[in-house]
Length: 217
Image (cartoon, rainbow, N blue to C red; front, side):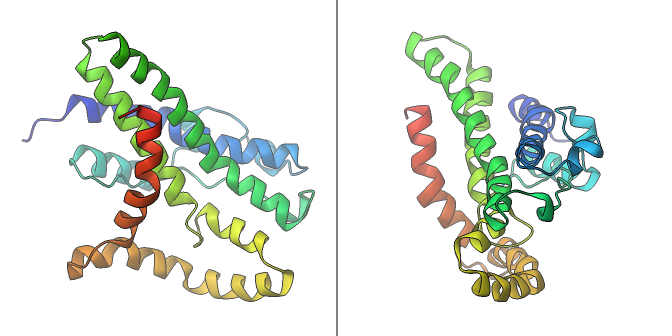
């Protein structure tokens, strides 16, 4: 049986206990602040990781992380939101959607502070540095991934808020029908065909500079 990487094991626990719950909590919090109490009524306006845990999404996150894969994939339970209750209509829905990815950026920035402090002061703690560095990288990747404008990702709500109402109505019908299929194709086809991964290119071009800025590397 292959030996588990301690850094990835610790990271998996932190992601399940912190990153995913914080992401969905911020969706619920902003929805509540903007007039929709659905998540609060259902007990989802909380940082309790048990409430937000999705068995399939959590298991996939553990498998992809602990297998040593360069691509961590997983999710928490979706936050229940009724857009009809939100102030601002489509714009309100976009702010609720943005709250999750921005919380991942916030977590990455918070973890980058002790990372840079330890590097600057020469602290000898390789395991802590590895966990903090991976935590920053994965949270930035989660932010970028969730902003892809395809359902069920948060970016689809942002896209629909940026266009005019007629275009939004037309796009919504197409995205709801084909968005998940396109997303799966983006994830799976490169490994099947051997072609360059569009997601890998996206992370390299967009996430890479953000990670370097935060970690100072």
